[in-house]
Image (cartoon, rainbow, N blue to C red):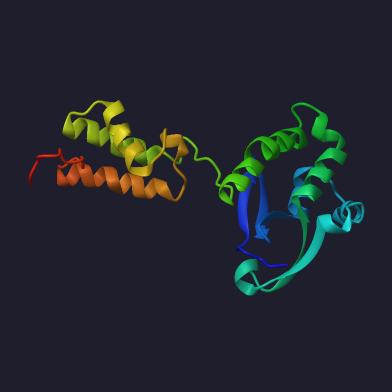
Length: 194
């Protein structure tokens, strides 16, 4: 097994689920998945999985974050198996049901498409950007759609909701720079000289 990434953590409601990529496939920390599905006996759940759906790996100090340790992980297939065997995953409104929907509709498609899952930003996460855009609108006389269009173009997104947590500070800085430097970055016309 070739571990290709550090442990990444994504959050589902109040649950943290650690994941990593091994041989180009996503693997999940078994305890985290079991906790989210309200499966209390992780060892028993692992015994019921096929051998190719589970593994124990040793993490380095930097991967574990708190010293080297062994950890049980499950493959994508193993996670599906646990979800399918979880009675609560079919009870609408339950945490396991919401988790199943989130995994199958959002997380796994994102991992397949980009190799990782990035949590969507929240309204609170975007407060700084909204404040910066408000300042841009008031100082430069733009309308909001024009101001947000600048951000969309700069970060190649259709909406500010599509910005990652890592991009938000960059977006705020970009908007502040436009406000402070007083120039909008535009594409020069063909015959325009600087």
